[in-house]
Length: 99
Image (tube, rainbow, N blue to C red):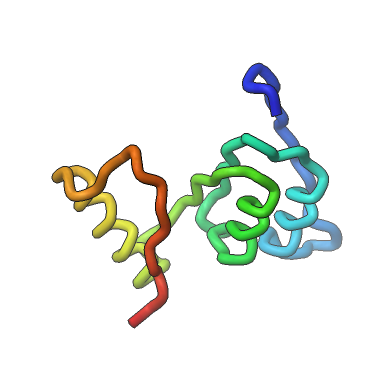
């Protein structure tokens, strides 16, 4: 996607389907290469994040307090980053599996 382009797409979940099932369908419709995809906390799912990465994109997914260990781990990472414990120029992954 050219940096000057903007894709804003909305798709209603068919027949009252859940947002988690509608998001993958929407992702398939879009050319996401090089884009940053944002999704609210309802869509913060491993399969959704994986599909975004598979399509050549990055993502920003919301995390809410009711998401237990994921919220706690994310908060820890952000605190480490704020105090200089992480290099912002290094892109990496961390294990967010519950202990």
